[in-house]
Amino acid sequence: MPRDEFSQDVKEILARRVGYRCSNPNCRALTSGPHDNPGKAVNIGVAAHITAAAPGGPRYNPNLSSEERKSPENGIWLCQNHGKLVDNDEETYPISLLNDWKKLSEEAARLEVERPSNLALPTKTDDLSLIRFYSQCFDRPAFQDPFMREGSMEAFDKAIEDTITAINTGTLLSRQGQVLSQSKGKSYLENSEWRRRMDVIVDLLRALRGRYADAIASEEIHIGSEHGGRYSYDIRNANLADWMDSTRIEILKIFAAICAEAGIPSLQFPRHHYRRW
Image (cartoon, rainbow, N blue to C red; front, side):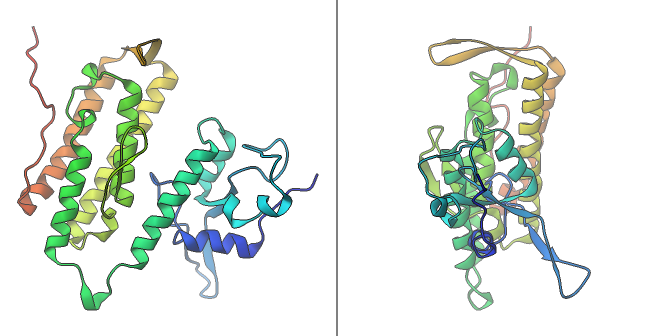
């Protein structure tokens, strides 16, 4: 059976609807730019199928018609890395998640398009409101408790993921995926130095998630049996816990410097001081 591939027009629609950025809210990488040849452009984005283009592919839905399968509604624009990931791991990247990514990314692009022009630039007060919003994102146990005292590894990872999403897109989600608060992503900060520091913070948050994933894969963190909706776990590498704590301290230290300049109370890590015997 032939594959129901997207037309070039559909690919262009998907790319333009998200401002040529990866639709993974934890990435949002720009996928298009200038080529050395002034008549060409570089593209590192892909139009991925939410449900596969042919039987046997990831998330294939036999109930869709050929036209539905190759329509914009069944596509999502991603960078090459995440395009490959979503096709190689359909359990981690189900249809519902990809649709959520698409919705969030299109909304983020809409906000960027509606951003005021140079004739009506946001004032300093707007930057302060964004910093206050980002402060809400860090006000959670994942940034307050030492790693060895985390109640749930799954909740820790989800909190880091949701914080990256909130800083990038301006949408703060609950653990259940409900929208708790909405503002704007870090690209809206007029203060270029604050924006640069928030970029560093997001890079460090991504490093946290990457190190966590490696620790699970290598069983430096062993996930045990489930009790009352939570899984037991065993951290088998003390250096891992120290790295997780020191990295979060660095993240909050950078954010605290922004808060100090903005005149906003900052958060501290850890939340409690424990006496070691």
